[in-house]
Length: 203
Image (cartoon, rainbow, N blue to C red):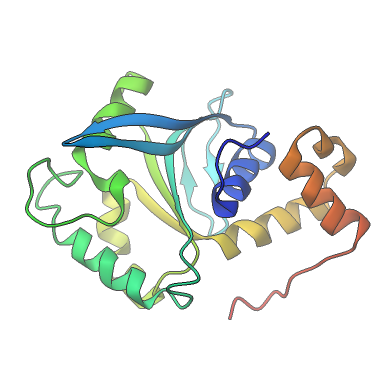
């Protein structure tokens, strides 16, 4: 049974578990000033294989994942692009946005506290950060890609994840084997039984 109420989170968890064989822990707590935040998903590929993203980049085998789905507010991703640019300006020369840095942070996994908790969980700073969002201004992402890649930070949209799941499912040797999991059963029902498909055009 799912423990999160966000469909983007559940699809991402299914993608990283079923598609890439990762072990996943959800909602790792992160103490922050005046409250408690979390890391949405902590994942590790147990055979220490890399995870190949839909765009061909390889990450892992250790990774933390943050999902954000605000398509009712920002379906185009333009506002997310503005928020991402603002967050990127707070890095300075560090791998994360340091605790005490002035300014609000939209993408919480960019913070020092989240980075340090991930280091404690993995016992090393050898991990990647992956963000899965509903949409993102691609020109902003392209402009920041090198900076983020140097910090081992990667971005996908949920459309990327769904298309990758679709292509993998089409060639799956035993798709009914996914039905032991709620999200896998929903996926098999929609795509296997009902024949639901999605367009290849990302626009």
